[in-house]
Length: 87
Image (cartoon, rainbow, N blue to C red; front, side):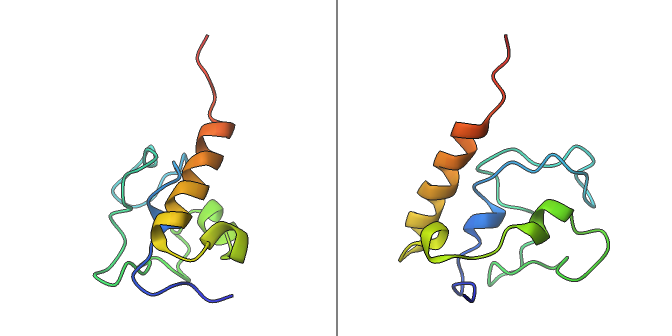
């Protein structure tokens, strides 16, 4: 499956705990990655400084759904279900 043009849900909805240029502690869930271009494509794609987790998240019909909004919900739900709760 190919990425949907102008989506970027997988670069916005999840948190990223790995360091990346400009974000030594990663990014929180819901924050668009600052490395997205105007078309919401990754400027770090194929570069060694791209976090490994980003390369492991592949588009799928289940995750992407039929719209950016559906993808944001699906990934957001996954983020919430896997969040570490402070005790």
